[in-house]
Length: 245
Image (cartoon, rainbow, N blue to C red; front, side):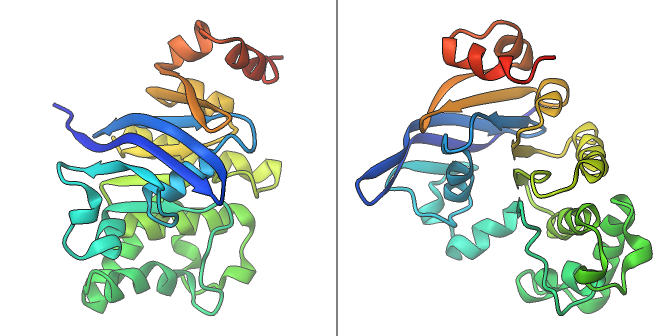
C-alpha cells in the first residue's frame, strides 16, 4: 500500500514583486513517477527548487511524511538527505574521482564509514553502468556519463524521493537515451521520482502522474491517459500539439 511522502499545499513563490508560482497543490506517494511538464518559464524548475529548499517558498507549506518540513529535526540538510536532487548541469565535484563524488555526501552528511560509503557507491555506479569509470574525473566523461554518475550519487544517499530537474536538457541527443534508460529502470524498480522534463515520451509512457504547468500555476494534473489523451484546457492541447508528429 502506497503512502504519501510529500504534500505541497498552496505554495507560492515571489521574486521581488514577480509571482512565479501561484497556489501550487499536489502530492507524491511512494512509487510515484510524476512528470512535471510545461513551456520554459512556466515555473517547473522553481517548484522543484522550492521542494528541495534551494529556494524558500513565499507562502504555503511542504509536508514530508506528516510534519511540515520547517519542523524537521536537523533542518534543511536533514530533509535533503531524504529528498535527493539530480541537476540539469550535473553539479559533480571536478576535483574528485567518480567514486569520491559518490562517497563524499555519504561520509560527510550521513556519517557512514568509508568502507560502507564505497560499498553503496559501487552498488549504484554498477546500476547505472559507470563502475568501469570509478577513477575518472568528471572532465574525462561525456555528458551522459556525468549525469549517470550524478544519479548514482543521489541514489547512494538512499533518499525517499528523487527530484530530477530537466536531467537530459544539457545533453547531446545521442546521450539522452542512456540517461532515460537508467530512469526507466529506476521507475520499474519502484523508485519514487518527481521529474521536470521536456521528454514527452517519458512523461507519457513511464510516469503514472503528469502535472502540466502554465504561467506559474498547475493547469492540469492526472494520469498520462488523462493529460495526454483528454486534456481539459486549450493551453494543454496547444502545448502537447508541438510534440506530436
